[in-house]
Length: 100
Image (cartoon, rainbow, N blue to C red; front, side, top):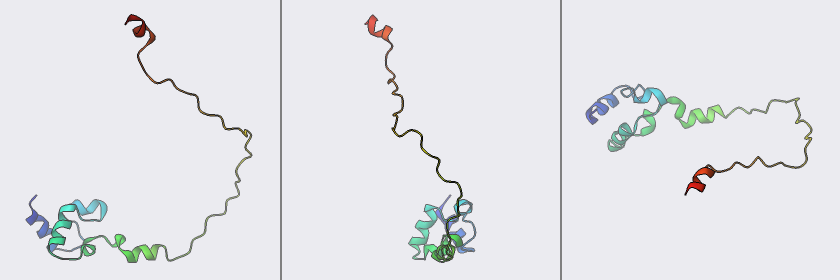
């Protein structure tokens, strides 16, 4: 797709899709970002609403506390840590060693 097509896409509604590239993530593709930068426009105008600083601040503006949990950790029976069983690294079989 030519860069003209991206420019034509940028002339429309700035938060609508840019030829399907923006529909998935809400962010313009790298080609569109290059064109926006070349035109000396603000890239954040072309990003989705949820990628803006205001929405981030709004999401974390309300205090939230962890849920109370009645389940405690069970008593640990084993006090010593047991290492996992060692696996042998794959190599030639013993028969091949004997043949050579």
